[in-house]
Image (tube, rainbow, N blue to C red; front, side, top):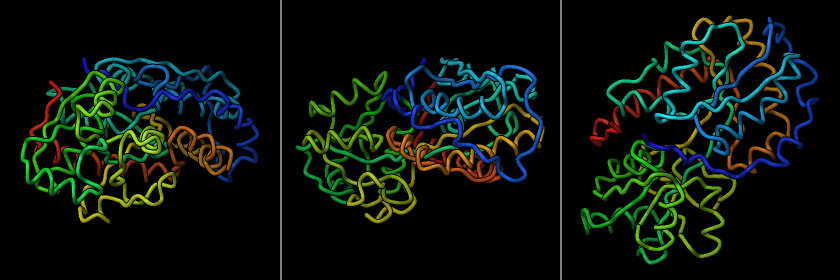
Length: 331
C-alpha cells in the first residue's frame, strides 16, 4: 500500500488552545437545524499527525460545543485513504459520521483500477476548510533560479533530471507531473515511501527537484538547503510573497494545491449540512483560527456546500486528465 505521509506532521500543540469554544458564538443566522442524537465521529483516512488529522482535531472542539455531543477523530488509515473513505461512504446519514479529506480522494479513482466509493455521489459536501500551498523547489546545485530555467534545463537534458515525491499519485507527484506536461519537458519521477526519505535525498542533492508544502520548504530555503522556484497555486503564498506562481512564470494551467474539506455520507439531511456549514464558516472567520491554520501551513477557506461540491467535480475531471496524459497509475 502507498503511505500518504505528505500532509505534514507538525503537531498542533497550542494551536487548539488558541481557539476557545466561544469562537462559534453567536450562532450564524439560518444555522438552526437538527443535531446528532449521540457522539459524532470525524473520520480521517490517514495516520495521526498528518495535516488532515491536525485539522480534524482543530474542528472537533467547536463542533462538540455546538452539537452538545462528544466529537472524536477516528484515524482509519490504509490503502491510500480508501479504507476510511469507504467506511464513511457506507455509514448511516444521521450526522454522527463525518469525513475530513484532502483532495487526494478525488484523485484516487483515476489512480486505481477500482476504489470502493464514488467521490461525488457517495458523499455530501459540507464545507471547504482550508488550502495548503505547494511550491516547486530544487537543490542549490541545480542551475535554475526560476521555473522557466528549470524547464529549459530539463528540455536541454531530457530524462536526466530526477524529481522525488512521497509516493505515486500523491499531490506532490501530480503537481510536478502537471508542470512537466504544461512545460512539455521530461523529468524522471522517483517515488518514495513517505515524505521524509524523499526530502532527505533532495537535501542530500541526490534529487534535483520536488514539490513541497510551503511551510515545509520555507525553513529549508532560509537555511540554504533548497531553493524556491514557484508557487503551484493560483495566487502567491502569504508565507513567501516574493515567490511567483507558475502561471506568473509562464506556465498557466499548472495550478495545484492541497485543499481540505468536510463531507458526510450521501443522504445527510440538508438542514444539518447548512447548520454545520454556517457554524464552521463563523469559526473559519475568527482571527485565532487563521493563526492556528497558518501555523500548520494552511489558509482558511470556507464558503457554501455548493462551492465545495463544484470544486470536487472540477478537480475530479482535471486530475483524471493529468493522470491519463501522464500515464500514471498507483496499482
